[in-house]
Length: 393
Image 1 (cartoon, rainbow, N blue to C red):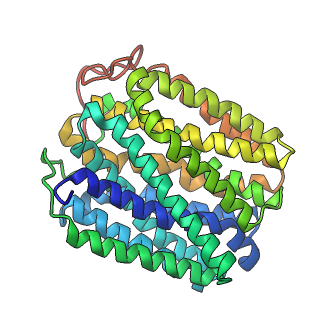
Image 2: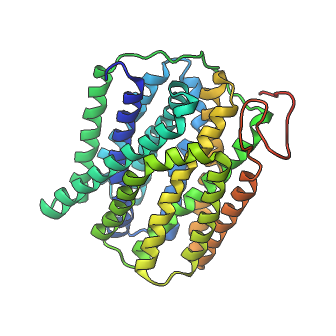
């Protein structure tokens, strides 16, 4: 086990999901109860949270100084520290600062983790492995939600202690695996400069609309549950619990399913489903139906594995680290702006926020139809936009 890099990937994923799931599950109730947030403040907070994601391209410069494996572990440690101190600053400015710190660790980790996954896992096994990793995320999140129930419901400790305990536990686990696992060979030497290639244009656009659409789900779907339907911490945690139980049961099968039907079909299914879900969010009036939509929404995002395996199949192996850095920035271009703008729109028309989300899903669907049935280097698109020669910058 010590000499298996895939085990390291899974354990890092577990720690990230454990800590981040607790932060996310408590966030809406914490900011409303302790800092009296409205849709405008939560929108600003979420926009600030995405700024480190927008700056993820800078990861390639950090990699000039340290190896990707060490960078991933350091980023995890920063994430844990940011979560650990969140409860000690229940004011608007304090929440903005701790959120940015947590987000720096989270987004750098996700950037490097995706790069290492595409380098360390064979193309034939990638979809199945990512499904397995999604199941590990779900198991970790379930552990996080169980800890919320134990610490807040049974032991009657406050938000402050919940955040501190889970962040400190995550940091201890990061230190442990840092010493347990050796330094693994990264395989193909990676470019240490920013790379943008014309032949990856479809992947870039899919990534952009994925970031825009996901922000509406992450920021406003959960916020709606609390503001419109009055969900408590226990109810929100139960909803997240259902989400991750479903993912734990079905994520490995989703990964294998994508491997069988191909990236184009998988993405088409995802975007048709998400269009219907966002329209339903705009119209829903029953709390139970809204909860069901939230679970379906979360499950459909598991199909996004197909976007990563599509890139792995069309990419030059040396481009992976640099392109992951750039793609994370592309993913967060809209994410930095959308929460703040739509937070203001939310004050007058929550329904319109979700209709905009449906529009993003339709754009993604159109793009997905241009994904080849059997993508590979030289076969990056199916119908239009083919590029004969790389252009880099």
